[in-house]
Length: 104
Image 1 (cartoon, rainbow, N blue to C red):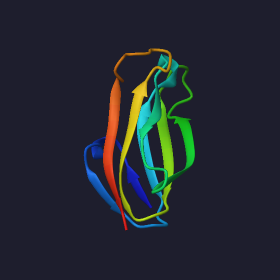
Image 2: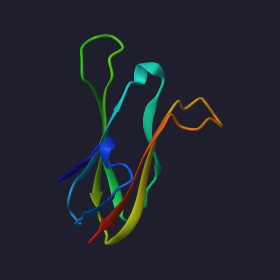
Image 3: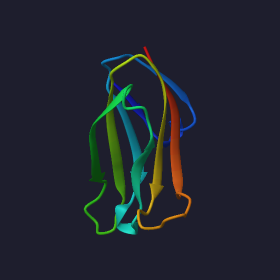
């Protein structure tokens, strides 16, 4: 199992077919911002689960967005996620996460 966070953005990662790849990113949907997939090759990576868990019981507190993938075929794929508000068209994302995933 491989877990990537904000600090891994911009890095290249090597994983094996059959591994589990988790991308865990901080966010706060009460602000209207959410993490969403922007780029990945679904012939190489299968998105198996997405979730959000608050890090606090306090109203308005942030938490963690988790995207779980299973590598299904060898090769390379860029993986990009964007932290944005879905209704703001033509506005650059507040934050991005990008990684190059090599699968063998």
